Image (tube, rainbow, N blue to C red; front, top):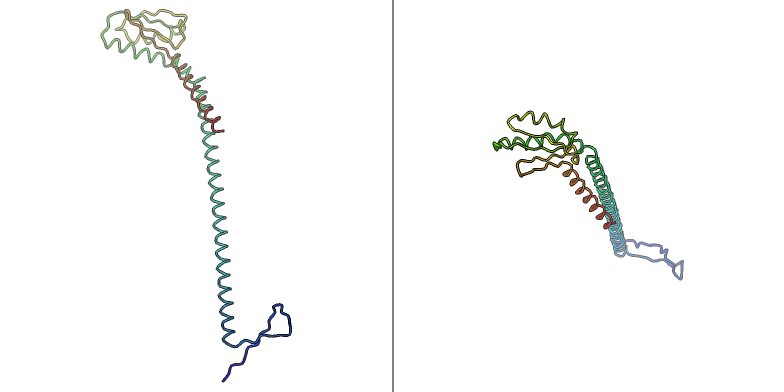
Length: 200
């Protein structure tokens, strides 16, 4: 028994529009397979293109996120550094000078206790600022085993004293220490400024 012939219209532009193409079952099956394969391949092409686009979008989003994180870190680092420098500057200008004045009696006492421990019998000559005398006298009174002569020194600040024992003299200069700290801080600020200028 012969199968009926499949008659398909051709919609392509042809010289004779009334002309029709007749396909047998094998040709129709082959045409169907070819169309399926082409459609399948086109579908895969579309899927791969979509995946490539998705990957590109994800990469762009990741790069933007990394740039934002980097910018935020740089901003935070600069903010913290600025705050630290401002805090250090305030401490050097206001907190430490006051702390040095209060620290002087403790430093002096440590030096005098060391002299007592060495069983020194020589009198100690202590030069200090005239205004510091009232602050230092209680320290001297707490060490009755050591003979100390207080000598006013107008050129000294309230954070400076000099201990003279015979020909030897030991200087406690907390103002000098503070000045050195300020100098180191100024150098650090200058280095940071130079670094920022160099990196734009």
